[in-house]
Image 1: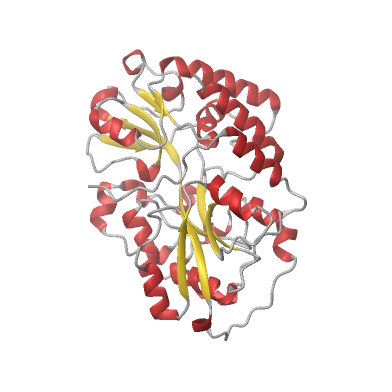
Image 2: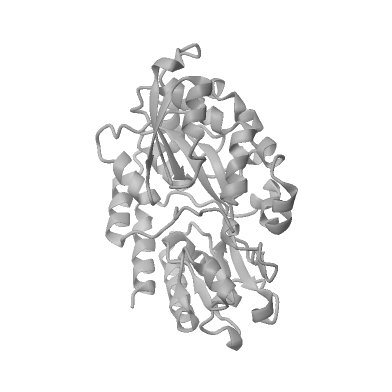
Length: 369
């Protein structure tokens, strides 16, 4: 049985997404936001007198981690849950102190928060376990050098398929967008905006972060054509559809492709793909920033961080943690063995600013009906 999978990327109503984009329009660069207004923190602070609130996706860290952290380091931890990036962003950008100290958000959302001056720069001296991260983890386009965020999980998107039902080895986004006749109505794509757009963007040779109106029009047209042979837009149950045989080929995040079934394989298409990252940020409004840094440092301990790879089946950008992952799991889920340098060939999604409204509109128009 596969570990519980948090529904971390479920699509949200277009109106909400569009509103968030407008609220997060950059008023300055991320570098400026990260450098300005950094608090002076006490490396010798008594952490037992501090307490923090952490917001995360359900099932995205061990349930007993807060208790273990308190026993080891002193601060009490309250955990709140959010279902989507958009949900937590609405809370963090509402204009008042959200009461949250540490939030888990995807990379482009961390970038948007930094551009608004809402996050505390990472004080590396308070997070010595940063040394466990792969060098590639400091080369991510939304936050080079991990100035205001710390990566928690990372991975890519590709084709997940049944070897006994496809009759060939798919290796192109075109296999999804224009499937062979035997696969018509047996393929699924994602509904969440950035991942709905991704196959067409890459098939057409465009950037996954394009804001060019003509290119976006081509992407929309290609997606509308692909809809004719589509079984469904599916962000959560595509693995079950594959296992049952209802689907033969699906768009999938690497960790969610159920390769524990020997008939199911995963491949990154030859046109390339993305490198998505989920991160941890500390809110500028936090009153307990030393404890917040200590919490992130505790996550980066190899014994703790390896839990994510073993239970969520997403790679973690922590060399020491990945070294602890069970060899049998690596055998049944070879995506976990993808080298960081190979991952870095993917295009990192960045905050699109006001241009995100175009993505929302296209995704709504394509998936409607």
